[in-house]
Image (cartoon, rainbow, N blue to C red; front, side):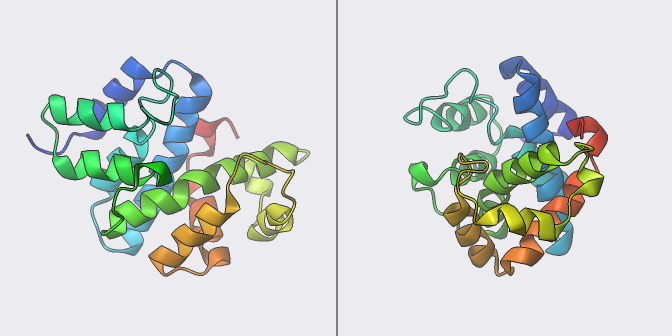
Length: 186
C-alpha cells in the first residue's frame, strides 16, 4: 500500500488517542517534521505523517515494552509501508531501531524538544508560543527540575545526528510549532 495521507494518519491517531494533550503533541511533532522535511528537501507530507503517528499507540500501550512496537506492528498489519513502521520505532531510544535516514534522525531529534518548548510557553505570562524565543528555551535548558521529563541528552544527541547545532535546532522546532500554535492551544 502507498504512504498514508494526512487524513488517514489523523483517522488512526483519533481512533487510538482520545487524550487532547497527546493529540496536540502529535501536531507539534508533525509541524517540526514538516519543517525538517523542507529543510532537507524531502516530502513534508510523508514526514508529517511520521510526526502524527509516532506516539499513536501510547495511550493504549504506555509501557515501554509495548510502545511504540505495538503501533509499528499495527502499521504493518494494515499494510502501510515498512519505512513508516521503522520511522515510528526510530523515535524511541529504547527500541534500538536504526536511525539511518534523515527522517528517522529527525523524528528522534524533535520528539522530546517539543515538550520542552510547550513547557517554556506555559510558564510565560501570556502562555503563548509567540512569546517564546530560542533564548528563553536555552535559559531553561540547564534547569533540570524544569520539565524534568524531557531528556535533554536525547535532544542534544538528536541535533548532533541531524548535523544541526542545538540552538539552531531549537529555532527550527520552535518556528514550526509557532506555525500551528492555534492547534496547540498556545
